[in-house]
Image (cartoon, rainbow, N blue to C red; front, side, top):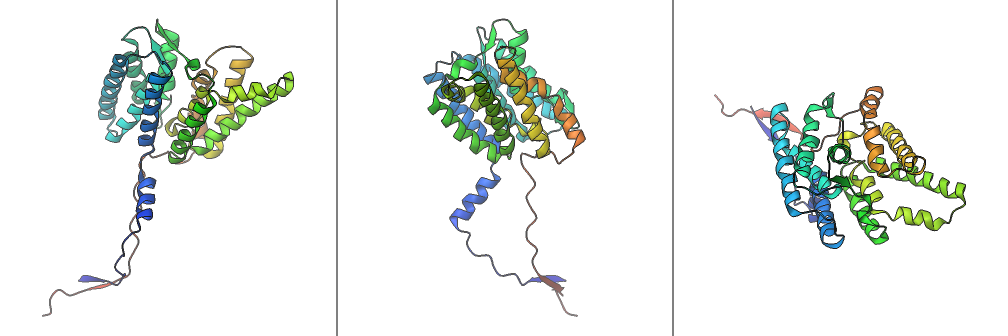
Amino acid sequence: MASIDLAPAPGPVPPLVRLRDAWSRLDARVLQILFLGSLLLAGAFMRDFAIRWEQVVLTFAFGLTTQALGARWLGLPAHGILSAVVTCFGLSILVRADSLWVHPLVATLAIGAKFTVRVRGKHIFNPANLGAMVALLFLPGAWISPGQWGNDMSLALWVAVLGVTVSSSARRFDIAWAFLAFYVGLLALRIVYLGARWAVLENQLASGALILFTFFMITDPMTTPNRRIMRYLYAFIVAVIAFAWHFVLFRTNGLIWALIIATPLVPVMDWLMPAPKHQWRPEAPPPPATERLPAAPSSLG
């Protein structure tokens, strides 16, 4: 029996509604790629990042090849290539080297770890963070330079605005603000304890590296706890480690070290308080049900 649909015919969708729906369906990694690409270009032309175009090309060539081979090996969706592009931009921004072989090697190892170091279907390390640490610890002639951003308040605000947009789209707004609140709180307590001027705190908050870390690295939904309360705890732990690294041990690159040290805690947190894993592209909701009558016979007789 054929069906008779009594639902009214849908009218034209307003442009603002179509724009809102398109924005809600946009993959957050597309925004990350646009913003990180603009940051890399701005840094290269305005901040003298001291990175060669050959290093960027090799980073992307080896990183994307590794992603394609790994995804085929594990049977993962092809859209994971967007995550690899984000990682390649991150490595190009963070890692510096005086040779051409460091960047492709770091990109291969960092993205390869996504497919080899996994717990319950989720990779453990933030690839850009892991690549930066491998370069820093094991590769001669390589370094990471947090001072490349300087202490420019306008730059920090610009990065923050972009980061807020990306983090909200990736649904990791909570951990970004939680980390910033804990870390700034510790910095403020230090100012009070030392009796220093508040201008010191203002100078510390103007760090482009801090804002970049807050909104583009710790917010990676695939390497942070699935449940919100655990993300708050994770942000607190990273903030404490970074603070201690900077102001107790008096070492550099505290944010990068804090994240790599705290990352192994994520599988434990997911095990203690399970929650659904983040999906970059959630399944589309089913269409609204319409009232239907039993189908009429196609023929009588």
